[in-house]
Image 1: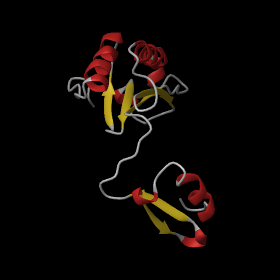
Image 2: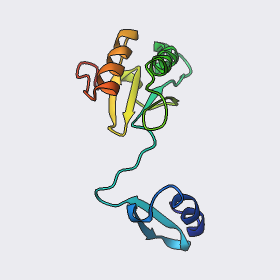
Image 3: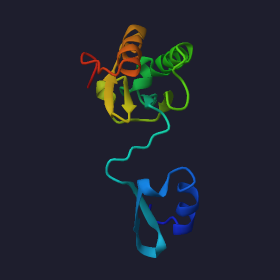
Image 4: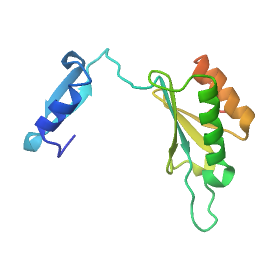
Length: 143
């Protein structure tokens, strides 16, 4: 990343990632940019789910007005109850504005970068069961 000294990135990144998985590109001012080598894959969670929980001012449409915080809490509890939470499994997080409020409420699942909208707990259950457990995209909720 620009502006980060080479020694900082070298010291902190290589503790977690073997050298063979990284390509290093020296940038200006001695910084280094890291990118995954072709064919390698790195993630801490199998699925990282971000719920947009943004609250806009002035009555503008936003995900939080559609109950996104409550649905995030519900999803987090369900994932824990199903023992899907943790390293190499699933992480449920709250995000600020994901800039898709007109389609909201929205969530996005990485590393696949699949976007969903939802209405109620049944939709959240379907996303958890189909996408997070069985790896199948829920077409009717995908945006």
